[in-house]
Length: 488
Ligand code: ADP
Ligand code: MG
Image (cartoon, rainbow, N blue to C red; front, side, top):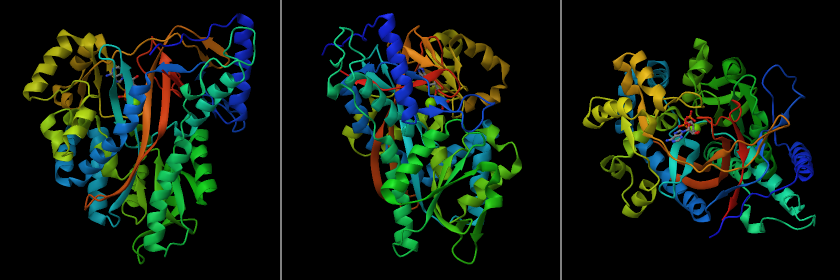
């Protein structure tokens, strides 16, 4: 298993490559909006690596293989209502601002009556390939608003195009390909995430509309979404392949745009159209809820007959606290009874500590101060930019009340390989080394009450990379870029 170096191009070949990446990407919708201010016709090429990044094939196949186990695990966690709600209730008191608010929404929705037991989840399990263990290690499991599944398919196609056109070849023969065809794998996440949404739509249509395909998906988005084209790619696949319309509505505007028919099983309508699936591409951070109405949106929709993607409990099952608890074998084995499956996913775990007053928690409190360089400290947040790294950890912990420490987990750092790939961002080339994070998408439809899993699928992949000097890899936040792999 030998790894090819990155293509080595001269200045002229590199300039040509940049021109071709740009035109292919723009032609095919590999785009996002720049930071504000911008007008709606002014998107730019998404930041992208100009070459695919090496990843061992066996590790990629493994990540695909275990996705169904991870999906099942998280579905089972939600179906074990008592276990999950006890954890979340406790967590709510140390993380009042977000977990506490979502929990409160859940209690209010429960009080109004939750009439739909079936819920849908579009997930992404994120990994880094760890150089110390030569294995992929899980960074986190996302259960709300997973992004880049729409753009990812286009990144693979871009690298494939460049390869097919001989632009990676440096021998002057401009038709020879540098990578073999099967070394660049293209993600079908745009199509497969749309199919995931359709499993929810179809379930609803069959059950409540005599199988007639006339309900819609309501995508709840953030105002001024820069990553709109990623979402659009999924919307268009859903229409093309399944003949289902998607309407987009901004989170703060939902209540003025929808009606719930209390006399007809709490059916949800958007401008007269019956909504089968509520698809959140928002509502994953406290700043989105700065007006009280936005919490009401969450409560109102949760009590409707539409299938939520995700439900509040499914979103909460993706808390970092749950990820930490699952690293304990006795807890994990509550949800998965097959040893082989347990071993397969345990291989991908890093050591994660609580920061409570248990023995593990007390050990972690010591480690955080004595060996901070080995760790990242994570709050119960999503969406990037929230973690505290290495020697910032002690000061940070000292700066908050001890009663809030329990809201954090302490995770051992993964050691990804630094590759000499080049990032193209805003027309500029950045070449001070990158590290990459692999994401595997999944979709599952399940009954939260009975635990029955109606559908479980793997839905393609994503590679994101960031300059090796930055701790975080947010693409929109300006740290990272989209990438795709060269499998060796
Ligand atoms: P978020 O929910 O904000 O996306 P993550 O857990 O994904 O939080 O962490 C954000 C980023 O921090 C990751 O994309 C990764 O670049 C980095 N990171 C997180 N955990 C680790 C880890 N254990 N080792 C190395 N880097 C990590
Ligand atoms: Mg993440």
